[in-house]
Amino acid sequence: MHRDIKTSNIMVDARWNAKLTDFGVARILDKPTGETKMMIGTPAYMAPEQARGTPGDARSDLFAVGVVLYETLTGVKAFPGDDVATVLDEVLHVDPVPARERNFAVSPALDAVIRRAIDKEPDDRYRDAAAFAEALMQAAAIERTTTGVGTLASYLRGRTVVLAAAAILVAIVAGIVTTPLMERVIAARDEPRKTGALPPSSPAGTSVPAPGVVDAQQPSAKRGCVSVNAVPFAKVYVDGRPVGETPQACVRVRHGQHSVQFQWATEHSPEYLITVGKEHTAENPLRASYDFKAGRFVSSTD
Amino acid sequence: MSRAQTSLLALVAGAALAAGGCATFEKVSTDAKLGLESRITKPVVYRLSGVDPSLRANLDRARSELAARNYRVAVPLLNRALWDLEKIHRRSLRLDELVVAYDGLAQAHLAIGADDLAHEHRRLSRALGEAEARSPASGVTQVLMKAKDAYVSARFRDAVRGLQQALIDLEDIEDLNTRVRRLADARCYLAFAYFATEQRERVRDELRRLWALDPALEMCRHEAPPGVRALIVDVQRKQKDP
Image (cartoon, rainbow over all chains, first blue to last red; front, top):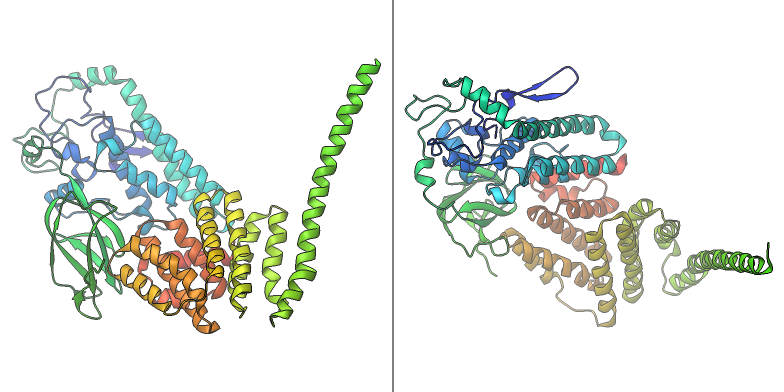
């Protein structure tokens, strides 16, 4: 594993070849270590399991590549919180606004690939870098067959990014293959890294106290679906955090009590308390809708 | 060459000629059927029903394109034909022709590889065929209102089901303007509900059909959420410059 894939660790040369750098926090997958409850990496690119302080696996790196791809294609971070605590909370609990909604040049196929790459559950992501790379190439191929001449420029821009991401994935595969070499490099450099892993006692920087120590002892939080809409439309906030715009058939939130609020232009709805349970699946979501014209929540009559 | 070899060669040549002949005959037969229908049968039926036969022009052209396997050319023609056919006052003839148009859309989408859309159009075709057999219902606008309510209250799956049903039931409205306006309304909300359930290709399909009625898509744009508005702009751009 690399453990710290992020935009600043990717270099692109004059020929648009992407190179993955800084294997400083890389660790051998099966290397016994007493630091497995320590949070390693950069919060905004960290997979949820890493944010919980668990070791993670190759799929955690794929999550980071997905976040990089999202950022490169949309120009905004997938988890844009202002401080580390907010970012970690978003990583753990908030699904980013689909890339396609931020940049319309992102094809539906590519959007689907990104969403799968940054799924909260490792089991729902691509099983390895090769599968991820293949999905990206397929998405590029679908785009090639459906893109008209008029959008050639945006297609080429998007395709360059996709190919760069595929190159990074190849680098990850290579990194895993050359892990014994990396182990020797790491052993020879037994000093704190300038980014990524810091001892638990380190002062605040890119690292934070390890909240994952507590979370790691608990099963991963289960999530349910909340279906949201508004008249005429609105931005939606769950527990004060933005989760996109209406209409959405399934905003995924943890089981438990939450507040939902809608914002349309400068108007805000009152906060609406909901309790999401295991019965609130994609087929049977909890519903919340606010009519700004009538100034009231819309009751469900099904 | 032995006599047996000569006989075998003659047999193979004969079979090849027969097969080619059958294919040619089949094509000639299909062309003749389409030609007969578009030039003689349907114009007579239309005139007897007091309908201008030119309303069938897009449908005829689309069917010719389908026969020539130009499926991507056929789809926009069929989308326009759906709105042209709405101008047929006689319900039974209108529904008959809509069945033909939806079958054409199903055929084209299947050939393009959009199986999901093909299935949806086939389902609509069947439902319209069944609707023709029953008497027109009253109070059909209630179906549309209930479906729109479902959309507003975030019951998107119910909304999709209700709006799909509305596309069939609204055919019972006699007044042309009311019928077309309600159908366009149903298609707009269907696009919104598909958007909510992340079925983007279906959103585009509905918007392309609405574009065939009104390239400005004013009616839909007015109530569309920002995500759908972005899709409207994209569909408009691609329809103008495919």
